Image (cartoon, rainbow, N blue to C red; front, side):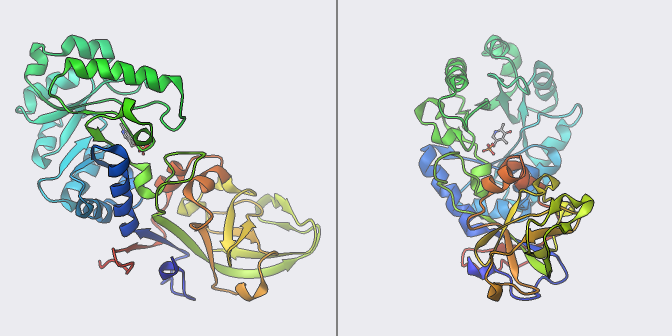
Length: 375
Ligand SMILES: *Cc1c(COP(=O)(O)O)cnc(C)c1O
């Protein structure tokens, strides 16, 4: 993706650039539709996993997506503002007491997960559609399966219009985990008790688990943004996010010299170091200290020492000197450093890397033609 590599000093005063490829995002949604074999929604919570609801939601709509999930009402407001009025928007985290009017005003749907929520929506929701969330194993949000079965066809539910019956998988990214089969069985029994109500079980990884978790609506998030929904196997998604920083300075150190705060790295011999203008204040985790990597001139370069607030130090000794100059780009996410690798290098998962990416970057969205999207 040379279109986004950084020409010298093009960062307009930022330390690093985050490029979000909206064409790849749309392509990923279409790939997920093919894999799911059902209607496919998009999860755009957490500001579209850090990629920006105002750009991401319309790009997904343009690709054909019609149903969106967020976590909070404020995110639903951002999605509503970015989408045509026909877009269906669900708010996953239920709804706080007294907020039904706000949901109605935005024309967004709560995901109801308790008797109390159902009763409040029945009263204040004026018969507007909502989803029912049944907890089949997470013990986090949702009605218990027995509770849901007891409510099915009863008077309380006759006063709300369940437009969707959903549950969430505990271990979708671990193929063969027996809990998935238990959840799938439990969910199949539940859906039989709610005839005519569309059902939704699969997240990104669930889309690749086949028939047993396939229902009427898939709910992928992470895979849309390029995360690998099939860990341990090749990533069927296109990369969407690219993070590049400029080299601020290059220096030579001798054996025994240290680098960074608290001298947590010692040069084993003569080494060449490059300092990048990016740090944990940008959302790049400090946990990547002494174990993260960046690509300079295509060469994997290890982080040395601790990640500072605004700076990272790389060992660039293996990089051909022609590729090393002040202002040269280093890739933190992209090419060989996919989201999942970056997550692993920081002792976490790609999801956390993605959703943590800060607001300090020069952010660019690329449109279908690979050009900088206007705005
Ligand atoms: C976040 C979330 C999703 C999307 O999960 P991914 O693993 O990102 O695809 C789907 N359903 C629920 C209930 C969620 O909270």
